[in-house]
Image (cartoon, rainbow, N blue to C red):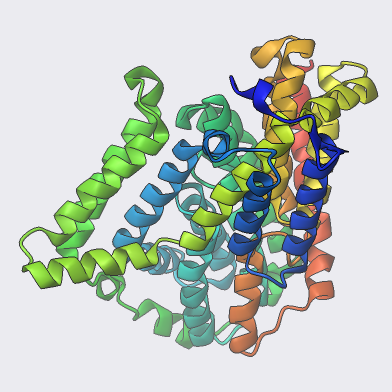
Length: 447
């Protein structure tokens, strides 16, 4: 931020802090109403920041975290190609058959499969892959899919917390403070695993005995061929090879001194090459355009605009000022800061999109570091932000995109999930998971 001296103190005769704050508040209010596409809102907010003179085009570009964008685009491309092989559906059907189509066993296995997939794919992709398989299996077993769908929603949000690439808040945090894939894996996997065990045990206790079917129905599921789910064996081998190499590279990134975004883009480029190798010119170009169409460009442009909007708050000193107020409230205590961030993140993220919230919190927490012992001392606060934002997505039906998508699919299948009905499960789940995270942080850092 070498150009901070160029930031105007006044805009149209008004303090730049007030103008920047007003732009952010208006943008976020419009975002939360969902009346306008979120990418449009973010891009318009970023444009206004430039037009009023708070940022120039050059300083706006400095605010964009291109490592995060590269990581998102690369992983979306890899997952989009891999999905075409049918590997994810294969795993779901294979897992169901491993528990002999037992409804209680199915509850456990689909929850864990969802959590594991969510740790390496984005939550939306995970539920789009798992929910249709769930409908297919429960239909054949002639049992209610409701508990399975609810548990899959919770599992997708909890499982995504375990890794750098599992949930957008983690991508934002990891990219911003240079955390590696292994940092997230070693630090958050234990609390995620404990939370999943508690959650599945509770669901089995409540629903287990009610999930019963006949041997004939079980046999119908056992007759499903998981091998038939694989639609392209050659692509499966290529995708598994690239995925394996990318994960290994993520885990070695800090030693290789290569950013996660570069690794993801390299993996995407290699898989695109393998996917189209040997095709004729027209067929190759058609395949490339099809894969680029799978990339969620709405999310990419949303992130781009959001980075610029938040940067406007940062350069005008608003976030630094809020950071100082936060230090005053917590009396400079790392422990108080950790638990305040954890619970406030969870509660806020259950009501609004956690991405703009986390994007705003990151520079604010960064501004607090010099006064509170530096990066190492503040790590519990960073982990609290990740856990709170990700676990908070389970709080309401609108807390995460995956929740809304599953609800929509359930509605079409004739098994509607109501907002209030979901909250009967979601509020206790969110509170229990955040309580487990509280205990984890207390034991890990403050005992």
